[in-house]
Amino acid sequence: MRQSILLLACLLTPLAVRAADQPPIPPDVSGDATAQPEVTITREGGQMVEEYRANGKLYMIKITPKHGLPYYLVDDRGDGKFSRHEGLDSGLRVPRWTLFSF
Image (cartoon, rainbow, N blue to C red; front, side):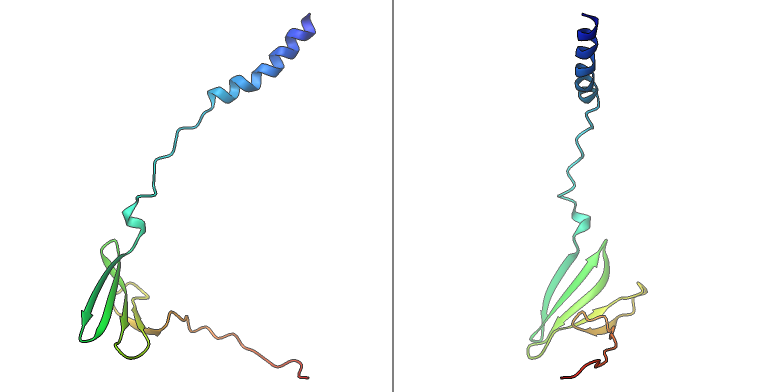
């Protein structure tokens, strides 16, 4: 009898612990507006200008001319001085050598 009570207590203990340790439900953060950049699109003289802002600060401008490829003006350092980038290429060039030729 004593063993069956001990066995029953061992089997019911995890259920009691699990019921007591329910974590609170996390708040819904899917609707957070600050995670998405604000994009303002304007058309000037046949070209399209897209301004990207985060927390109200302009950090990138994409300019798509009427004829030609789009280019980007990016504020790399956050000081308000924009540098031009063709595509979003980082400019990193990995060295390549010909090791074997058949």
